[in-house]
Length: 54
Image 1 (tube, rainbow, N blue to C red):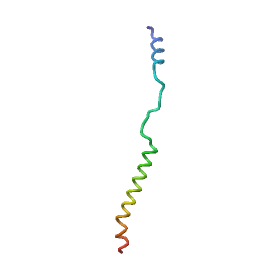
Image 2: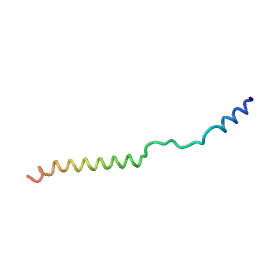
Image 3: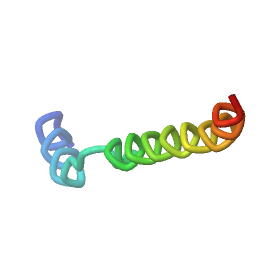
Image 4: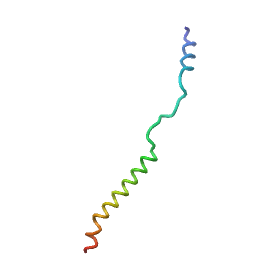
């Protein structure tokens, strides 16, 4: 098999390029924002009774 035939057969047998499937950044940042809001809310629940006692 000559070199051009090898290149042609190699390029034909390749599957089409797909973008890499990674984690959804929108979902990750949404979960991060939700966790941050939950942490702030939990901290407020701890601090609020001491604030009202003054």
